[in-house]
Length: 192
Image 1 (cartoon, rainbow, N blue to C red):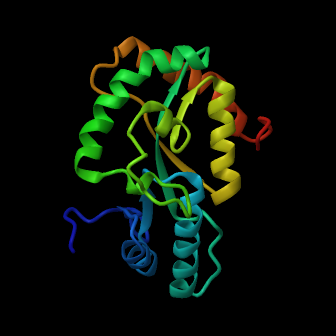
Image 2: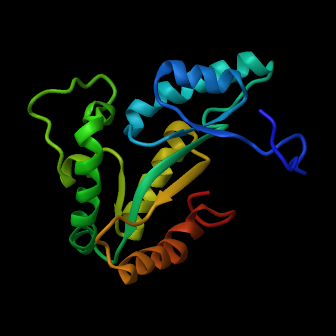
């Protein structure tokens, strides 16, 4: 592929690709393309992150750290209480997820070793325990620390709004995230 005008960044701007299947993970890692994951819960991410690390290490001839070269997309909403976060975010979030899961299905939301069954239903509670960062600053911080500690997550992309969420609510959530969550993840900020 040729880009015009030619980028000034050397050696080149980093490329990112959405990955999930073993084939896409191996392909991106072998080609030096950074990967983005979205849906899987942390227990199911571990094996995927390890596959990326192992493939990238072999292809590059150097040892990759777990989480290196990988980004993770998560829905994030921060409020003063867990109840407030849910009350303000649930309807907008579920509108989006009902549309996505209509064609995607729930299989990518299963925990490691868990089989999809008829008992699984799309709901806020189902998602909250698997891949949402929705709640108080303390709760969201704990979940981010878990991602960092369990899979070495270095790049977190925040999905902060969905159709139907009032703009003022999205902005207040971002303010709380910036003021009360982010400082915990800077040098000397508590979580590291």
